[in-house]
Image (cartoon, rainbow, N blue to C red; front, side, top):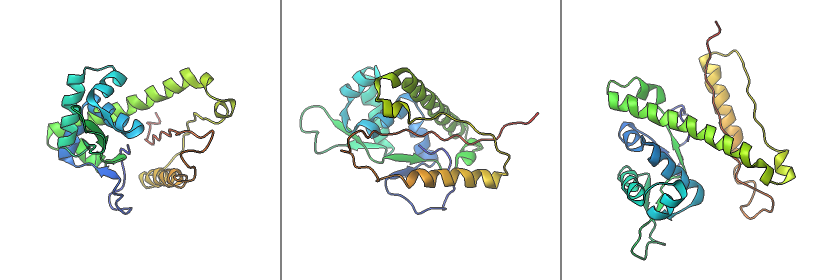
Length: 202
């Protein structure tokens, strides 16, 4: 998920769900975010299958999947839903929040609160993913154990240059998409987290 993108700077990607105030409120629940991310990463699943994977009740996953469907984030998978149990799939493979700052200043407290929930859940999921890697990297090949990175940098910038930096990193990551086929031996899906924000100097 991209929490802040310049509106109108790039052509709209049909595979990205661009969130407005209405759909933001439909996404702002910790379990809904986990369900959506799981469907995007692992593909179609049933409510009971997702419940087992996430350690939740099937009643909870079923309810929140229906809510995600109401707001256009997930849908029935007609190629799999031939039995009694519904199969769900993500409608888009990514989410973009073009107006993060506007949402956080919105006069409607529900919109402000929803944006806050989503941002904190994204930050928490990044931490969880990194900690999972740190705890399991010994299970990976030696090549992968020498091919990961955790870094941080401090650079004095203006707001304009900060946005430029983030956009260039987005473009760099995008330039690697499609370069490795899914069946390439030794390949894996690599997670790249980006956080760009100012810090006080005193």
